[in-house]
Length: 217
Image (tube, rainbow, N blue to C red; front, side, top):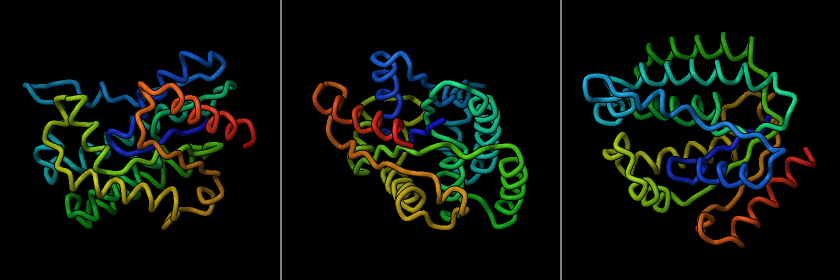
């Protein structure tokens, strides 16, 4: 199992759909955004998180962790090469950690969250064979997120995108405050600032780098 990581608006879903259409032996799995975007009383959990982050941060991050762990346990049983959008690890080290550092999750709530994360992930989840980081300048991520116009993301401030970018760099490039087991997982960083969706040459260059990475790890 390989994990495709990246900021909001980095192009993960689009890239997975394109590469799956051209490489049938490479199986892909999208992030379960639809679960978090299901509306109840006119608002989804994701919308609640973005519009009232301090109130909903722990609820959302705990629910997302549960969903990601459930999926991870299924994916790690696959005998095929599997490329998965996001993971329990970026959910923790990028999004949940950012909520704590930004003051949306209190010190006590963070301790509870960490206890759950460490118990469930350490005892049940195997680390992936590699991480693929679609790295995008946060200004470009922000514009792409605005352009795709998902209703749940309409209230995301640029500062949040910038912070999540920093957390991804800390996790996947600097490898700060992560377990030794995760530090040993290979990472390839792909510059995704150029438009690969309409530029065939850019897409082919990205795909070739990723397929070579998978072949040699």
